[in-house]
Image (cartoon, rainbow, N blue to C red; front, top):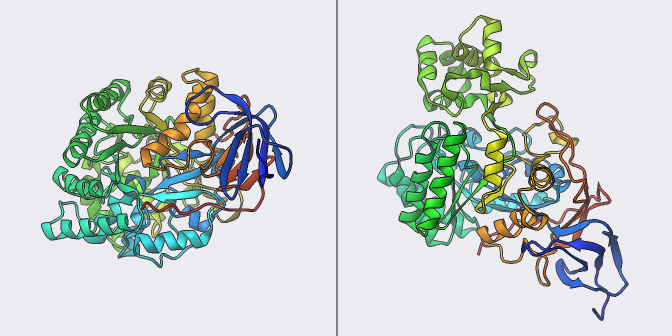
Length: 525
């Protein structure tokens, strides 16, 4: 037993410690931001009652896009209410550094607005600005390839020249030296489509030299998705870098999804250090302007307005294989609630076009032209997954879940913002994999949310409840934790989480925010 009263004791809970071991009854003592003891603890000090509840390490979101929204509202309400205590940003080639032209950089920042001026250029500047915001969650970032290319190549759809590639490598190495944890790509997006395989391998080598991880939103996520995973494997093998395939399962059906899983299995069997993550939705979420080729996106709003009404541009858009082209099936693409075309919200592009008496591509161009100068106000979902895919994916031993979303809040400056998955992902994962489908034991499901991503990233003191580890802790009802958000009413807080500690500070007590925020910007050293 302890001889001095700790600062806080979580009393009488069932500990699921993150290792995958069987749950056990124990107290958890916390002092000075660290776990002091897991076991029997003498009375004394402040206590949280966890009788009948699960006590686990705080959940780690391996694939977040909260880079900017944490600056706008650092409370991370949607995450904290699900027990999330750490987020990995800079995914899919999107992120907040390096920046040379804010107008261009906004193309690769989810949630960018006028709310927080971008006054920094480097990883160091961004990390300092984020630390000043005092986020409620811990944050670590990858270096986004989209911003590397926008800073050096711009929106030109071509390979980087040798001089440009040297400059991109320099910027990548600088960001890694300043504390980033690896390198990410989003090869379906306009700013990265021109990057050839050799360019990626060169940059992966730079990441590998500093021990970083390579996370990739692969080049093709419809037909040919498995071949795109194989391209990522080749880059990882050539650079000897750890590979994290982002949201692995493609939009092109169950058989193509199985081929993607087989490609990962084959790579692992050959000795490649590979794993993958998957979001928890049956659809993807992105901007409607993702339908446009780089030559249009690169233009200022006034010129875009002219181009979008030009017949030659529309023919170019019709032939452009984008993240939204969906094999020409625009009935899969649904416009979300928005302030520009509220009459069309929650309807698919095919039906909107039919009502307007237009071809879907013409309708898309008109909708975007009418939204200028801020086409980012138009977001869409792409119905593309099945529950069979979810079962097969989340049962796979190399899979871990991620939000693929931004942190949000139902009140405050982000109250009107929507990013599907933000309020639901971790709660959905535990409900679906443990209680509904019985794919994973409670201990294994918690391990996938904690120790697995921690080890993948190289976080040695998080993701596990043991003495000396950072005191990131969630206390929840294993039988009641559940998401409440729906496709068209997504901004509803998950239920079933009672207490959350971040670095030993109680951020959520009895299901309510305390107002205390103790998240840290975690820099890799």
